[in-house]
Image (cartoon, rainbow, N blue to C red; front, side, top):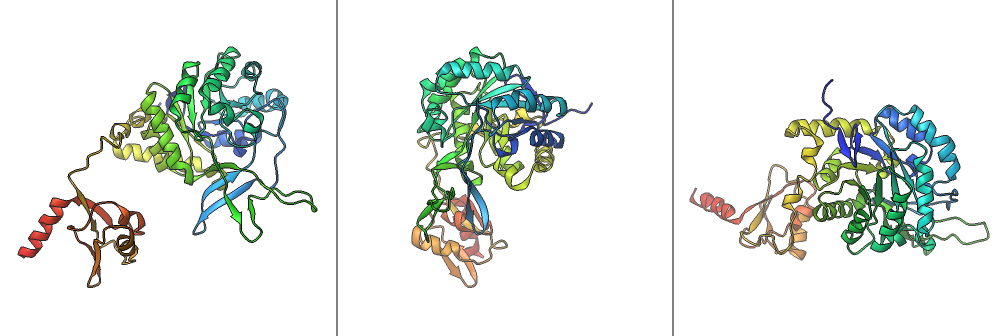
Length: 416
Protein backbone atom coordinates (compact mmCIF):
# COMPACT_ATOMS: atom_id res chain seq x y z
CA UNK A 1 0.00 0.00 0.00
CA UNK A 2 1.32 3.44 -0.91
CA UNK A 3 2.41 5.63 1.97
CA UNK A 4 -0.05 8.38 2.92
CA UNK A 5 1.94 11.64 3.25
CA UNK A 6 -0.94 13.35 5.08
CA UNK A 7 -1.24 10.77 7.85
CA UNK A 8 -0.33 12.04 11.29
CA UNK A 9 -0.56 10.94 14.91
CA UNK A 10 -2.23 13.30 17.33
CA UNK A 11 -2.56 12.64 21.07
CA UNK A 12 -2.12 8.94 20.40
CA UNK A 13 -4.80 8.88 17.69
CA UNK A 14 -3.92 8.11 14.04
CA UNK A 15 -5.44 10.57 11.55
CA UNK A 16 -5.64 9.84 7.83
CA UNK A 17 -5.26 13.56 7.20
CA UNK A 18 -4.99 16.56 9.55
CA UNK A 19 -8.28 18.22 8.60
CA UNK A 20 -11.15 18.22 11.10
CA UNK A 21 -14.46 19.96 11.16
CA UNK A 22 -14.33 22.06 14.30
CA UNK A 23 -17.24 22.27 16.69
CA UNK A 24 -19.90 24.41 15.02
CA UNK A 25 -22.91 24.43 12.70
CA UNK A 26 -21.39 21.94 10.20
CA UNK A 27 -21.25 19.34 13.00
CA UNK A 28 -24.70 20.00 14.44
CA UNK A 29 -26.02 16.48 13.77
CA UNK A 30 -25.16 12.99 12.59
CA UNK A 31 -26.30 13.48 8.98
CA UNK A 32 -23.83 16.27 8.33
CA UNK A 33 -20.91 14.58 10.07
CA UNK A 34 -21.46 11.33 8.16
CA UNK A 35 -21.59 13.18 4.85
CA UNK A 36 -18.34 14.98 5.65
CA UNK A 37 -16.67 11.76 6.70
CA UNK A 38 -17.54 10.10 3.39
CA UNK A 39 -16.08 13.06 1.49
CA UNK A 40 -12.69 12.54 3.10
CA UNK A 41 -12.39 14.66 6.25
CA UNK A 42 -9.94 13.25 8.76
CA UNK A 43 -12.28 13.84 11.66
CA UNK A 44 -14.91 16.03 13.24
CA UNK A 45 -15.59 17.67 16.57
CA UNK A 46 -19.28 17.63 17.41
CA UNK A 47 -21.27 20.74 18.18
CA UNK A 48 -20.73 21.26 21.88
CA UNK A 49 -22.89 18.86 23.90
CA UNK A 50 -24.53 19.74 27.19
CA UNK A 51 -27.19 17.98 29.20
CA UNK A 52 -29.96 20.07 27.66
CA UNK A 53 -30.34 21.53 24.20
CA UNK A 54 -29.87 25.24 23.50
CA UNK A 55 -32.35 27.69 21.99
CA UNK A 56 -30.53 30.35 19.95
CA UNK A 57 -31.50 33.87 18.84
CA UNK A 58 -32.59 34.54 15.28
CA UNK A 59 -30.78 36.12 13.39
CA UNK A 60 -27.46 35.06 14.97
CA UNK A 61 -24.84 35.50 12.24
CA UNK A 62 -23.28 38.72 10.96
CA UNK A 63 -20.78 39.47 8.19
CA UNK A 64 -17.62 41.55 8.03
CA UNK A 65 -16.87 42.38 4.39
CA UNK A 66 -14.18 44.24 2.49
CA UNK A 67 -14.89 45.17 -1.13
CA UNK A 68 -17.75 42.70 -1.04
CA UNK A 69 -15.59 39.80 0.12
CA UNK A 70 -16.38 38.06 3.40
CA UNK A 71 -13.38 38.36 5.72
CA UNK A 72 -15.07 37.64 9.03
CA UNK A 73 -18.23 36.20 10.47
CA UNK A 74 -19.71 36.92 13.88
CA UNK A 75 -22.05 34.58 15.71
CA UNK A 76 -24.17 34.68 18.84
CA UNK A 77 -24.94 30.95 18.67
CA UNK A 78 -24.26 28.64 21.59
CA UNK A 79 -24.31 24.88 22.00
CA UNK A 80 -26.04 21.95 20.35
CA UNK A 81 -29.80 22.23 20.11
CA UNK A 82 -30.10 18.50 20.72
CA UNK A 83 -30.03 17.18 24.29
CA UNK A 84 -27.39 14.77 25.53
CA UNK A 85 -29.63 11.73 25.04
CA UNK A 86 -30.02 12.36 21.31
CA UNK A 87 -26.25 12.33 20.89
CA UNK A 88 -25.60 9.30 23.09
CA UNK A 89 -28.50 7.13 21.94
CA UNK A 90 -28.86 8.07 18.27
CA UNK A 91 -26.33 10.34 16.61
CA UNK A 92 -22.97 9.14 17.88
CA UNK A 93 -23.81 5.44 17.29
CA UNK A 94 -24.99 6.32 13.77
CA UNK A 95 -21.78 8.21 13.01
CA UNK A 96 -19.57 5.40 14.30
CA UNK A 97 -21.54 2.84 12.28
CA UNK A 98 -21.66 4.72 8.98
CA UNK A 99 -18.47 6.81 8.81
CA UNK A 100 -15.52 5.30 6.92
CA UNK A 101 -12.89 3.40 8.87
CA UNK A 102 -10.26 5.73 10.28
CA UNK A 103 -12.56 8.73 10.64
CA UNK A 104 -11.97 10.31 14.06
CA UNK A 105 -14.96 11.52 16.07
CA UNK A 106 -14.33 13.95 18.93
CA UNK A 107 -17.15 14.91 21.30
CA UNK A 108 -17.12 18.56 22.38
CA UNK A 109 -18.64 19.08 25.80
CA UNK A 110 -19.51 21.87 28.18
CA UNK A 111 -20.86 21.04 31.62
CA UNK A 112 -22.07 23.20 34.48
CA UNK A 113 -19.67 25.23 36.65
CA UNK A 114 -19.33 22.44 39.23
CA UNK A 115 -16.29 20.25 38.41
CA UNK A 116 -18.19 17.04 39.19
CA UNK A 117 -20.60 17.77 36.34
CA UNK A 118 -17.63 17.62 33.93
CA UNK A 119 -16.76 14.20 35.35
CA UNK A 120 -20.26 12.88 34.78
CA UNK A 121 -20.59 14.28 31.28
CA UNK A 122 -17.17 12.96 30.27
CA UNK A 123 -18.09 9.54 31.61
CA UNK A 124 -21.38 9.49 29.74
CA UNK A 125 -19.88 10.54 26.41
CA UNK A 126 -16.92 8.16 26.74
CA UNK A 127 -19.33 5.22 26.81
CA UNK A 128 -20.64 6.07 23.32
CA UNK A 129 -17.52 5.06 21.38
CA UNK A 130 -16.16 8.50 20.50
CA UNK A 131 -12.40 8.66 20.00
CA UNK A 132 -11.65 11.70 22.16
CA UNK A 133 -13.24 14.53 24.13
CA UNK A 134 -12.76 18.26 23.65
CA UNK A 135 -13.51 20.53 26.61
CA UNK A 136 -15.14 23.78 25.51
CA UNK A 137 -13.79 26.27 28.05
CA UNK A 138 -13.57 29.04 25.50
CA UNK A 139 -16.96 30.10 24.11
CA UNK A 140 -16.83 33.92 24.40
CA UNK A 141 -20.56 34.73 24.46
CA UNK A 142 -23.54 33.48 26.40
CA UNK A 143 -21.62 30.82 28.28
CA UNK A 144 -19.53 33.22 30.43
CA UNK A 145 -22.80 34.66 31.74
CA UNK A 146 -23.40 31.18 33.18
CA UNK A 147 -19.85 30.97 34.59
CA UNK A 148 -18.68 28.49 31.94
CA UNK A 149 -17.09 28.84 28.50
CA UNK A 150 -14.43 31.55 28.43
CA UNK A 151 -15.21 32.36 32.06
CA UNK A 152 -13.34 29.13 32.82
CA UNK A 153 -10.81 29.32 30.00
CA UNK A 154 -9.57 32.76 31.04
CA UNK A 155 -8.54 31.41 34.44
CA UNK A 156 -5.69 28.87 34.69
CA UNK A 157 -6.97 27.46 37.99
CA UNK A 158 -10.52 26.95 36.76
CA UNK A 159 -9.21 25.42 33.52
CA UNK A 160 -7.08 22.99 35.49
CA UNK A 161 -9.99 22.11 37.78
CA UNK A 162 -12.39 21.12 34.98
CA UNK A 163 -9.61 19.30 33.11
CA UNK A 164 -8.83 17.20 36.17
CA UNK A 165 -12.52 16.59 36.71
CA UNK A 166 -13.10 15.45 33.12
CA UNK A 167 -10.05 13.15 33.34
CA UNK A 168 -11.69 11.38 36.27
CA UNK A 169 -14.56 10.37 34.03
CA UNK A 170 -12.67 9.01 31.03
CA UNK A 171 -9.66 7.13 29.73
CA UNK A 172 -10.01 8.83 26.34
CA UNK A 173 -7.65 11.56 25.16
CA UNK A 174 -8.82 15.00 26.26
CA UNK A 175 -8.30 18.15 24.20
CA UNK A 176 -8.80 21.50 25.91
CA UNK A 177 -10.06 24.21 23.56
CA UNK A 178 -8.47 27.54 24.45
CA UNK A 179 -9.81 31.05 24.17
CA UNK A 180 -7.93 33.86 22.41
CA UNK A 181 -9.63 36.36 24.72
CA UNK A 182 -6.78 36.45 27.23
CA UNK A 183 -3.71 38.60 27.75
CA UNK A 184 -1.39 35.58 27.69
CA UNK A 185 -2.57 32.12 26.66
CA UNK A 186 0.53 30.29 27.92
CA UNK A 187 -0.42 30.10 31.63
CA UNK A 188 -3.81 28.65 30.68
CA UNK A 189 -2.24 26.16 28.27
CA UNK A 190 0.28 25.06 30.89
CA UNK A 191 -2.44 24.66 33.50
CA UNK A 192 -4.47 22.44 31.17
CA UNK A 193 -1.52 20.20 30.31
CA UNK A 194 -0.37 19.93 33.93
CA UNK A 195 -3.91 18.92 34.90
CA UNK A 196 -3.80 15.99 32.47
CA UNK A 197 -4.91 17.28 29.08
CA UNK A 198 -3.56 15.20 26.22
CA UNK A 199 -3.72 18.01 23.66
CA UNK A 200 -4.78 21.61 23.13
CA UNK A 201 -7.10 23.13 20.54
CA UNK A 202 -6.56 26.76 19.57
CA UNK A 203 -8.43 28.90 18.96
CA UNK A 204 -12.10 29.50 19.63
CA UNK A 205 -13.73 32.66 18.31
CA UNK A 206 -12.65 36.18 19.22
CA UNK A 207 -15.14 38.21 21.24
CA UNK A 208 -16.42 40.97 19.00
CA UNK A 209 -19.09 43.36 17.84
CA UNK A 210 -19.40 42.92 14.09
CA UNK A 211 -20.79 46.37 13.32
CA UNK A 212 -23.59 48.89 13.72
CA UNK A 213 -26.48 49.76 11.43
CA UNK A 214 -25.99 53.52 11.62
CA UNK A 215 -29.38 54.27 10.03
CA UNK A 216 -31.17 52.77 13.02
CA UNK A 217 -28.33 52.98 15.61
CA UNK A 218 -28.58 49.21 16.07
CA UNK A 219 -25.63 46.88 16.74
CA UNK A 220 -25.42 43.81 14.52
CA UNK A 221 -26.46 41.07 13.99
CA UNK A 222 -30.09 41.74 14.87
CA UNK A 223 -31.79 39.23 17.11
CA UNK A 224 -35.40 39.88 16.17
CA UNK A 225 -37.97 40.07 18.93
CA UNK A 226 -41.74 40.19 18.73
CA UNK A 227 -43.26 42.73 16.37
CA UNK A 228 -43.85 45.15 19.23
CA UNK A 229 -40.40 44.74 20.75
CA UNK A 230 -37.03 46.21 19.76
CA UNK A 231 -34.38 44.26 17.91
CA UNK A 232 -31.29 43.74 20.01
CA UNK A 233 -27.99 41.86 19.93
CA UNK A 234 -25.06 40.89 22.15
CA UNK A 235 -21.31 40.60 21.84
CA UNK A 236 -20.48 37.55 19.78
CA UNK A 237 -17.62 35.44 18.49
CA UNK A 238 -15.66 36.41 15.35
CA UNK A 239 -14.33 33.70 13.05
CA UNK A 240 -13.08 33.58 9.48
CA UNK A 241 -9.99 35.01 7.73
CA UNK A 242 -9.90 38.12 9.93
CA UNK A 243 -8.83 36.11 12.99
CA UNK A 244 -6.13 34.02 11.30
CA UNK A 245 -3.23 36.22 12.50
CA UNK A 246 -4.51 35.80 16.06
CA UNK A 247 -4.81 32.04 15.69
CA UNK A 248 -1.33 31.74 14.22
CA UNK A 249 0.13 33.83 17.04
CA UNK A 250 -1.50 31.77 19.77
CA UNK A 251 -0.58 28.41 18.23
CA UNK A 252 3.02 29.60 17.84
CA UNK A 253 3.15 30.91 21.42
CA UNK A 254 1.92 27.59 22.78
CA UNK A 255 4.29 25.61 20.58
CA UNK A 256 7.24 27.68 21.76
CA UNK A 257 6.31 27.40 25.44
CA UNK A 258 5.12 23.77 25.37
CA UNK A 259 6.98 22.02 22.56
CA UNK A 260 5.72 18.57 23.61
CA UNK A 261 2.04 19.56 23.65
CA UNK A 262 0.04 18.41 20.60
CA UNK A 263 -1.88 21.36 19.18
CA UNK A 264 -4.95 21.30 16.99
CA UNK A 265 -4.86 24.67 15.24
CA UNK A 266 -7.60 26.70 13.69
CA UNK A 267 -8.98 30.13 13.09
CA UNK A 268 -9.45 31.54 9.60
CA UNK A 269 -8.13 28.58 7.58
CA UNK A 270 -9.47 29.11 4.06
CA UNK A 271 -7.22 26.91 1.93
CA UNK A 272 -4.19 24.60 1.84
CA UNK A 273 -1.80 27.56 2.14
CA UNK A 274 -3.32 28.58 5.47
CA UNK A 275 -3.20 24.96 6.56
CA UNK A 276 0.53 24.86 5.87
CA UNK A 277 0.96 28.10 7.83
CA UNK A 278 -0.65 26.58 10.92
CA UNK A 279 1.39 23.39 10.60
CA UNK A 280 4.62 25.35 10.30
CA UNK A 281 3.96 27.25 13.54
CA UNK A 282 3.33 24.08 15.50
CA UNK A 283 -0.14 22.65 14.85
CA UNK A 284 -0.43 18.92 14.15
CA UNK A 285 -4.09 18.85 13.17
CA UNK A 286 -6.29 21.59 11.73
CA UNK A 287 -9.86 22.63 12.48
CA UNK A 288 -12.20 24.49 10.11
CA UNK A 289 -15.69 25.94 10.41
CA UNK A 290 -16.20 29.26 8.61
CA UNK A 291 -14.70 28.03 5.33
CA UNK A 292 -17.05 25.06 5.40
CA UNK A 293 -20.05 27.22 6.22
CA UNK A 294 -19.31 29.35 3.15
CA UNK A 295 -18.10 26.69 0.71
CA UNK A 296 -19.38 23.30 1.84
CA UNK A 297 -17.80 20.02 2.88
CA UNK A 298 -16.33 19.33 -0.56
CA UNK A 299 -13.46 21.78 0.03
CA UNK A 300 -11.69 18.83 1.65
CA UNK A 301 -10.75 17.56 -1.82
CA UNK A 302 -8.71 20.66 -2.67
CA UNK A 303 -7.30 20.92 0.85
CA UNK A 304 -5.82 17.43 0.78
CA UNK A 305 -4.78 17.45 -2.88
CA UNK A 306 -3.11 20.84 -2.84
CA UNK A 307 -1.37 20.30 0.50
CA UNK A 308 -0.01 17.00 -0.84
CA UNK A 309 1.19 18.72 -4.02
CA UNK A 310 2.94 21.39 -1.98
CA UNK A 311 4.68 18.77 0.15
CA UNK A 312 5.84 16.91 -2.94
CA UNK A 313 7.10 20.11 -4.57
CA UNK A 314 9.08 21.10 -1.49
CA UNK A 315 10.34 17.62 -0.68
CA UNK A 316 8.46 17.13 2.59
CA UNK A 317 8.12 13.39 3.13
CA UNK A 318 5.57 13.66 5.93
CA UNK A 319 3.44 16.15 7.83
CA UNK A 320 5.79 15.76 10.77
CA UNK A 321 8.44 17.50 8.70
CA UNK A 322 6.18 20.56 8.35
CA UNK A 323 5.13 20.81 11.98
CA UNK A 324 6.98 23.67 13.62
CA UNK A 325 9.22 24.32 10.61
CA UNK A 326 8.79 28.09 10.92
CA UNK A 327 9.30 28.33 14.69
CA UNK A 328 13.12 28.67 14.66
CA UNK A 329 12.70 31.91 12.72
CA UNK A 330 10.28 33.36 15.26
CA UNK A 331 12.06 35.26 18.01
CA UNK A 332 11.63 38.22 20.33
CA UNK A 333 11.56 41.80 19.09
CA UNK A 334 14.76 42.58 21.03
CA UNK A 335 16.57 39.78 19.23
CA UNK A 336 15.65 41.00 15.74
CA UNK A 337 18.51 42.44 13.66
CA UNK A 338 18.27 46.21 13.27
CA UNK A 339 21.14 46.33 10.77
CA UNK A 340 22.05 45.99 7.97
CA UNK A 341 19.27 48.08 6.42
CA UNK A 342 17.11 46.99 3.53
CA UNK A 343 15.31 49.18 1.03
CA UNK A 344 12.35 48.70 -1.25
CA UNK A 345 12.61 48.21 -4.97
CA UNK A 346 9.73 48.33 -7.44
CA UNK A 347 9.50 45.38 -9.81
CA UNK A 348 8.69 47.30 -12.96
CA UNK A 349 7.18 44.51 -15.01
CA UNK A 350 4.61 43.90 -12.26
CA UNK A 351 3.89 47.52 -11.38
CA UNK A 352 0.52 48.77 -12.64
CA UNK A 353 1.26 52.40 -11.74
CA UNK A 354 -1.61 52.56 -9.25
CA UNK A 355 0.29 55.10 -7.14
CA UNK A 356 -0.98 53.67 -3.82
CA UNK A 357 2.63 53.33 -2.74
CA UNK A 358 3.43 56.90 -3.78
CA UNK A 359 0.61 58.34 -1.67
CA UNK A 360 1.27 56.10 1.33
CA UNK A 361 5.01 56.78 1.36
CA UNK A 362 4.45 60.53 1.03
CA UNK A 363 2.01 60.78 3.93
CA UNK A 364 2.98 57.94 6.27
CA UNK A 365 6.39 56.75 5.10
CA UNK A 366 9.71 58.42 4.26
CA UNK A 367 8.82 60.19 1.00
CA UNK A 368 11.14 57.84 -0.86
CA UNK A 369 8.91 57.03 -3.87
CA UNK A 370 8.56 59.36 -6.86
CA UNK A 371 7.50 59.31 -10.47
CA UNK A 372 10.34 59.12 -13.00
CA UNK A 373 8.73 59.60 -16.38
CA UNK A 374 5.93 57.04 -16.39
CA UNK A 375 7.63 54.81 -13.80
CA UNK A 376 7.47 54.69 -10.03
CA UNK A 377 10.93 54.44 -8.47
CA UNK A 378 12.39 54.31 -4.96
CA UNK A 379 15.15 56.62 -3.75
CA UNK A 380 17.38 54.29 -1.69
CA UNK A 381 18.88 57.24 0.18
CA UNK A 382 15.45 58.07 1.66
CA UNK A 383 13.90 54.61 1.96
CA UNK A 384 13.88 53.22 5.52
CA UNK A 385 12.67 49.72 4.60
CA UNK A 386 9.48 50.02 6.69
CA UNK A 387 7.37 47.91 4.31
CA UNK A 388 4.37 50.24 3.95
CA UNK A 389 4.64 50.30 0.17
CA UNK A 390 4.37 46.51 0.01
CA UNK A 391 1.33 46.58 2.29
CA UNK A 392 -0.65 48.94 0.05
CA UNK A 393 0.58 47.62 -3.32
CA UNK A 394 -2.18 45.69 -5.09
CA UNK A 395 0.05 44.07 -7.69
CA UNK A 396 2.77 42.49 -5.51
CA UNK A 397 5.36 44.69 -7.20
CA UNK A 398 7.61 45.46 -4.22
CA UNK A 399 10.69 43.56 -3.15
CA UNK A 400 13.28 44.33 -0.48
CA UNK A 401 17.02 44.17 -0.99
CA UNK A 402 20.12 45.10 0.96
CA UNK A 403 20.70 48.83 0.70
CA UNK A 404 24.32 48.25 -0.38
CA UNK A 405 23.09 46.22 -3.32
CA UNK A 406 20.71 49.02 -4.28
CA UNK A 407 23.51 51.58 -4.14
CA UNK A 408 25.73 49.26 -6.15
CA UNK A 409 23.08 49.01 -8.86
CA UNK A 410 22.73 52.78 -8.91
CA UNK A 411 26.49 53.18 -9.26
CA UNK A 412 26.63 50.74 -12.14
CA UNK A 413 23.79 52.57 -13.86
CA UNK A 414 25.61 55.87 -13.43
CA UNK A 415 28.85 54.46 -14.89
CA UNK A 416 26.99 53.29 -17.96
